[in-house]
Image (cartoon, rainbow, N blue to C red; front, side):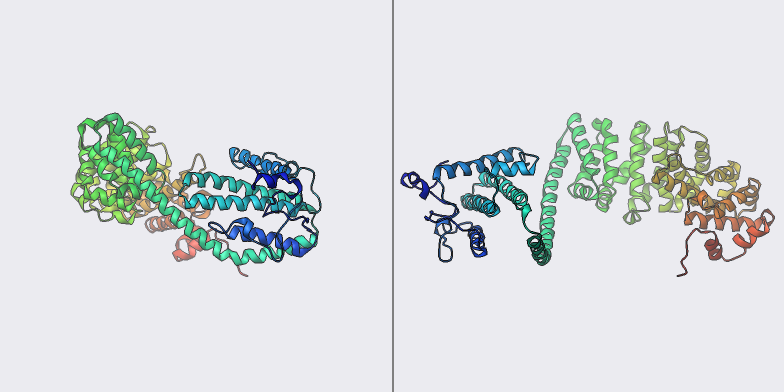
Length: 560
């Protein structure tokens, strides 16, 4: 790169080209604050004049032009060339400094060692480079040369980082007073800029979110179109797998997929016999999408419940396919989702679905299949009380209690949580008590009151708490029947309930378990009061429920 100017100017040596304009025969005196201020002001003028401003050489200072130093023009060009080459290297290294040592980096750029005026000279050098790059970026922007704008912006960033790093290293010898003064001034400036920066960042984040959503929507549209138009098993399998991966990224992407026809396309797959081998994958993806309201609405529009009922009741489908269909049913009937309470199409097919799910529980070959089927049944019992009557007629209590003794099907607290949920909801029916006694259900409920986590993970601990709570609720409801209450007393249920009330560690300090156990204990005490000691009766049964709760709870009260 040749220095600016003509050959005659370059041949004059001492009177070569300067940083901000043509050189004058005098050196810049940097000892006075006015001169320093003028030099830095000139940098600001150049930066603010971009793009399309006047040429840098045409901007005079107050009363004189700026002169940095009198050196040979070729020597000066060599120094500037060193800055440019270092910038290119930093671009390659992704804006990482060439040297790990800040001092070494300063020595590399400021060859000859820093002197008293070097910080100012360093600022002027880098300022000239940065202002020149900014002017060039403005020119490329005006020409719509976006590729050059991008590469030059990266280089400009490198120069700015270098200037900050070099200036910090060279100016360490500044006096403490000056540092404190600058710090106070900087804090004042930063406080005044905080609101503006926050607003800018908020707007930037909002626009970026919109841009990202548009881009994701476009990609989802392409995947949905590919599934909808494909008649090739391998292509559909790959595309459906990509769609399932997107559903695992959270609810926002599930909403986009639902809005762009993902549910419609997947049910189209589930209605084609040529894609039977893809049913489990498609149904798994549907279950993920239906965690959002838009997914459930789309399922209703395409008669998805009827399609699920057909799959569940068709024995020609594999167990894996029927298990995934049960997972979709469990998702769309979840009591935790407020928008699933009014599935009009579900009531029409509920008897077929409940019958198929009970059969799937009875024939399940693994704990995962049983968990999905039982979870769907548990959620359906919350949806409509008619489901409990159907389960009673289908001998579901016997199927569920028999499964509890099968470790291959029921081996985790999560599965027992689903079973005891079904029992708790069915126990509101009068006929349920006799079936529970006939199948030794009270003993099973007694065992659930002692549910303990194996791994100690928060999810498993929470599941154990739910099992204990629902077991106590079931026992309290069933104890309306004197025969069930006497059986519970015979199995020492009262002593276990007292232990759960008095020992916070036994119930993991759960207030919900405590309330359920107190209610069950009071129901049993009404039938068999002789099973209680006087202290237990006076503290846990005789007072108001809230007083017994406060006595047994582990809540710490402050009297300050």
